[in-house]
Image (tube, rainbow, N blue to C red; front, side, top):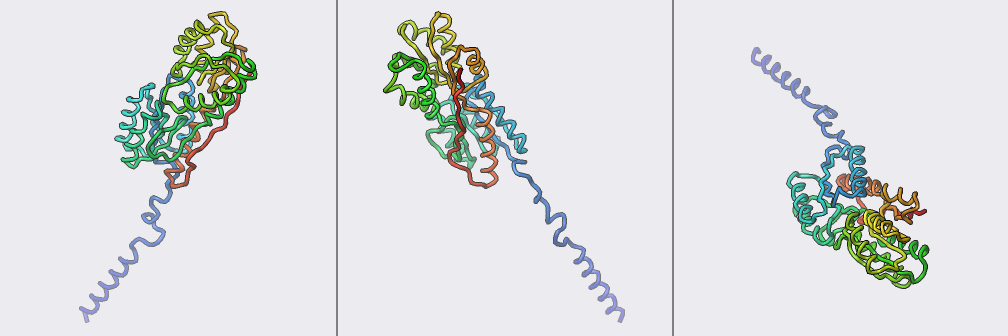
Length: 307
């Protein structure tokens, strides 16, 4: 009888112990269910150069949006050096970032870096300039061809049919330079006389020097289209120093360029909205990491800033 009583007590204790174990809805079952989108994401952003106000604004837009969404972003400056950009991307891969955004120095040269990220199963988004190869989740940029056409049509309106003009080209190999030139020359081919075409690498100092050389050989130039505002402002310095009256149109609508337009010195500039490009890129990055479908190409609208 005593043994039977002890056995019953033991069984009762076992039942109570089982009932005290975790029940549905307990804390451990719900753990991890409250994570927020973007909260733990680490995004790397390789920018072609932070020596250009356009890309400074673009990266600031990206950083602000990442903070808003709770993601962490690490911005690295390639300093307009394709080899450094490749090394920077490798560093981001080694850091184990969740996604890499790349604003290429050179669209062809960046292919190897994109492929390295692909091999590490790290998704890539290109920003402002595209990559010639590798797998990319999305490309966020303005329509540079349309922007080049917009600039060409405005320059034609100001200087007249058949006028002699010059074109200052961006970094050779950069998709933005190629596409802006393509758009401009769609207009210029039948309506303007492009007597000089030379690269100034998107740089203000080079724009000044190149324009000085062009003026020496082409004294009858009436207009200039520069693939970005930095070159346009450099060209403007050379033109003003030479005492010439030449119409200059740029591209990017940087603060300095808009000020020059307001002062009546620069005829116009195509506004790309770099802050919005940066914000849109981070939004696409977080959506992609959340498993949502992202468009392969996301355009950001353009507008012409003029006198």
